[in-house]
Amino acid sequence: MNKEKIKKIVLDIIAEIAPDEDLTEVKSNIRLRDQLDLDSMDFLDIVMELRKQHGIDVPEAEYRELESLDSSANYLLPKFDSGAVA
Image (cartoon, rainbow, N blue to C red; front, side):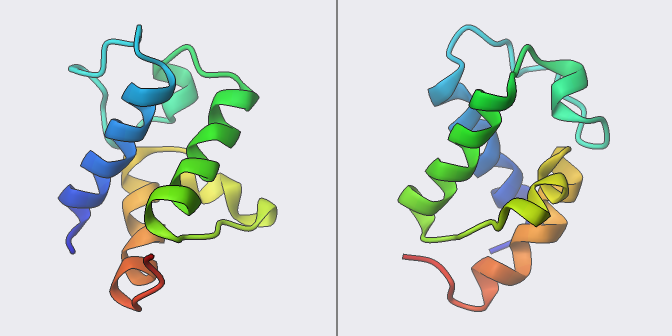
């Protein structure tokens, strides 16, 4: 697993939960909520899909780690690499 694949996974999940969003211009270093029309329920859906699709639990205290694609990749890479994947 690498950071680019993880970014794609996160974008694919966003595409599922917010199909009307244009994801072609998403910048990896800018907060997703600043770029997209995502509310707190959408964000929770992202966390739930990470658990459902990949077996990765994100504790509520660590939700901020998923603010941007870059921070998501940095946070999730060791989880994917450790085998914390379903």
